[in-house]
Amino acid sequence: MNRQEFLRSLGVATLGASFSASFLAACGQKTTTDNSTVVTTNPGTMFFKISLAEWSLHKALQAKEFENLDFPVKARNEFGISAVEYVNQFFKDKAKDEKYLAELKKRCDDNGVTSVLIMVDGEGEMADTDAQKRMKAVENHYQWVDAAKFLGCHSIRVNCFGVGTAEEVAKTGADGLRKLSEYAQKSDINVIVENHGGYSSNGQWLAGVMKEVNMPNCGTLPDFGNFCIRRENGDMWESPCVEEYDRYQGVLEMMPYAKGVSAKSHDFDDKGNCIQTDYLKMLKIVKDAGYTGYIGIEYEGSKISEADGIRATKALLERVGVELG
Image 1 (tube, rainbow, N blue to C red):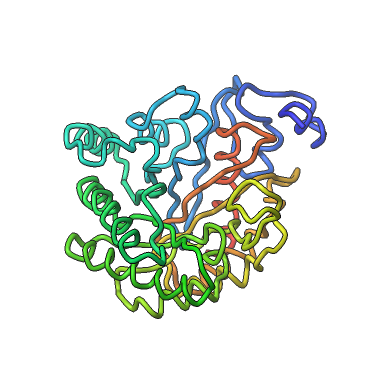
Image 2 (cartoon, helix red, strand yellow; image 1 turned 135 degrees about the vertical axis):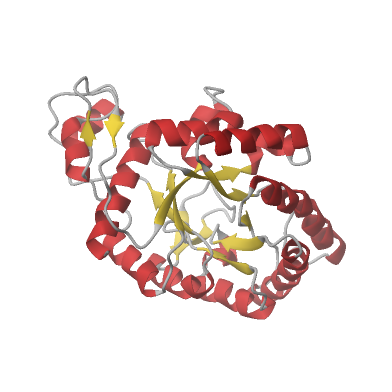
């Protein structure tokens, strides 16, 4: 289903350049008179702050429509979001480039944008059962700890992957995370693990790893949607999911260690609610845990554009956030 078909399915008669006025009204937002720019309404008092995960715009970034340096200003000017979460693959060769990082920081500072965290992928398996490979993965992450410190982030998000039994990977994962957290602690940077597939999408398992690490700067990044623990062909991403952990239970189990939260979204109904996740139920879990930090928008849908998905997720967070107070 393409964007126009999606909007027709909602009973929208007129399509705007940015998004349907009816849909945005249902989400609690309004458009300008030419229906081209979404204006964020005052969200009122919420228990959390909103940030934007760069992965929400990964298609546009991969298509070279803009680059990582432009991301903070785009988040602020186009979406009214003044806190950002980077993805390392969009500046993979710049972790040690102080000139590049200084320019990125300057653009944030000049536009009142806060750098929240860096999501790190592709640097080796933190829970590799081979001790040498595991240590190499730990050391590969050092540069991102340093980059996060330079940019003013509070954390780097890492994965806890490895091959073996659940018990073996938990043990090696705790070892790798502890070593990296010891390095990051010197720079006052947190090392946080997302439920990102495999064992890590089992909330009880990941909470157990956190208990084993037992360091104040090592925590979790609960994601509302990444709870597939087993796929059809045994791969991490492509095959259909055949075993999924309960997302509400998983977030509940991870929240005691949370230093960030990821608001995953895919599709929305005609009232602006996320189809896959009950945001009222999920945000109540987050609030009840005493969390007051950033919740990062991570839109991954395909029925509407990335920009429209970000706006819809933001409107939903604001609406439910105000309801919960």
